[in-house]
Image (tube, rainbow, N blue to C red; front, side, top):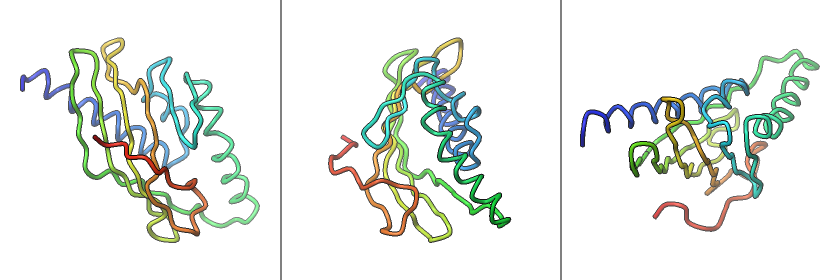
Length: 156
C-alpha cells in the first residue's frame, strides 16, 4: 500500500463520518456534501440521484421531527449512527468500493442496524460518495426510523 493509498482511505473515512454526523443532526446540506453531484442515495427500495433529489428525500422526515418537537417543547431525541467494521477497497486512483456496518441508537435503545454498501469516486480532488445503498439487517419492532429489514446479503 502506498502513501497515496493511505491518504485516500483516510479521505474516504472522513466522507463516512461527514454523512453520519450530519445525518444524526438533521443537517441535510452538510450530508449531501458527502455525495458527488450525480451521487445516488438508495434506501427503502428507492433511488435518489443528485443533491436536490437526496435533499428532497430526506428533508420531510427532518422537518416533521422538528415540527413535532416545536409543538411539544420537548428537547430533541438523540439519534446516533455508530459505524463499526469497515472495509474499503481502492479500485484505482479515482474509484473505490466500501462496506460499513452500522448500528443506530435512539431513545428506545438499539433501534436498527445494517450495512452501507458504497461506491466512491474522486471528483474535483475530493473523494465523494457516488452511490450509497442503505441495507437494513435488523430493526426493533418499535423503531420509528427504519423500514423492514432487507433479506439479501450485501457484503461479499
